[in-house]
Amino acid sequence: MIPASLWRLGFWLCFGLTVYLSLMPQEFLPSGINIWDKFSHSIAFAALALSAALGWPAKDFMRSVLIPLLIFGVLIEVTQYFIPGREFSLLDMLADTVGILIVWIVIRLLQSLSAKSA
Image (cartoon, rainbow, N blue to C red):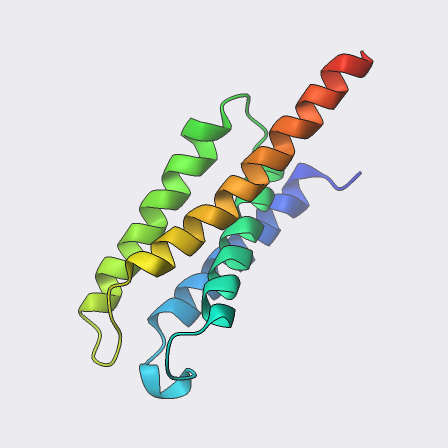
């Protein structure tokens, strides 16, 4: 079992990398909208959600993980609006949300299976 402190470290590393990549100047990023861009958003926010949920275990995933990460995703998009060459994207926010919700669904399923076996 991985200790919560390592999950917290993983969260902060993912958080820093996500901020860095999200605010990087456009010339260093691939151009155009493609499915891999949205997939990378989903993976990044799934990693954030999973590491947060395991690093700071709480009964209320919605309030302690989901809502703060959704706000983080919106703040990134709003910030990108003001960065030359970057843009605000509702599709990016949707991809962020999908990643978070996948983790939430998996956690709920695991909790349900655990409750049934107890």
